[in-house]
Length: 506
Image (tube, rainbow, N blue to C red; front, side):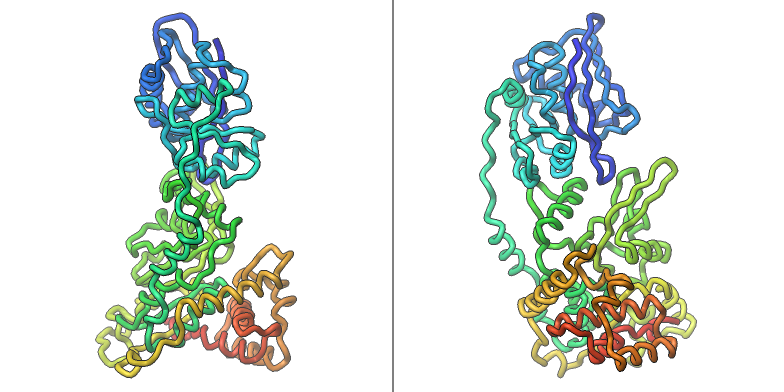
């Protein structure tokens, strides 16, 4: 007998439909799976056999051949178990085949027949809708994640017997109880974040952080140890707005596939802070087929690189493309993939190897300082919109009142982003940091004085063409923070003051 079931497999951040074809014929008992199955799929033979028997069904003592089509697509993960088991039951006439064409099956089987959730559920649900499937059978703990996708019926099945019942026309298992309300979760998360009111004496850096959050700009904090670079960066999540529903589904899909979350919609923006020993493959991706790096996991959020000059130079140079294009292209010998990587880069670095250049305690040689600065190349620094020099605040600075709190800064950031969204309605971007030259000409027009100020900075060699465009983007954001429709000379002046490239290069 021949039976077919449908499921999906993950290929990078993409999903590919898999047709599970099961053929049972008389002969010596054998169980063979073909179709580029990885080790976890090949091991499914033992899980499927035990689950079928422990669920009260008969496992055929015949020659069983399972083909996973298309044969040239690698099949990975234990999520194919449920489709394999139902295919065997249908081919052995223990399960009717009527509903198999319209139902997708996704889940790992335990030896007792229970169904476990698998990473990538949200992506599977989206793929079902795109493929025209009506119903998705999966583990109850992942059902609410799948229900984020509209126009798809979700059938929770906690046991293999429950899946057979659904395919027989019976009702699925009940949904698990919902967790705490989303708003309560968000309020609790915000209350637990470090607050900007704890930062004293670094008003210029705090202002730069608020500007970066409002426009989605990259920011570099440069200063001696103990001046508050890391402290400031860790407070960035407290002033960022929540993800919109579209962004939340996009980010949740990425983290669901990577296995970083279990059955919930993300509302807070990602904040990734890899150690400086990370490899290029770890940061960008491609360590193995389908492997995504930190830049992809930071999509729609923040990538924080502390001790920037301690990262390997090839690793830092690999950031150029995603910083400029908002995506990363990974090309290997037998595969190539393009992944989304639209993130804010927040970086912190010391001015010299010992960290104390400029305050009298530095003992580094001129050659050592030059080598240190060369680790941060000009093209990389040119892609960073805001560059702030932090100095020791001293006793008076530490006793000064805070410049703002996270709640106040967040309100300003949300207001600025709403102005951007209204102005950029109909454009392909939503933040000032992503404006191209044509959009800048429409949305960031300058008066003659402002244009002269910008031309003067470029004539003195302080700005490249890219730097000029990025300065305009920052000036547009400063105007939005201040509620101004037109970019003025003051906005341009502040933006220029936050790009002191000559102080960071050798």
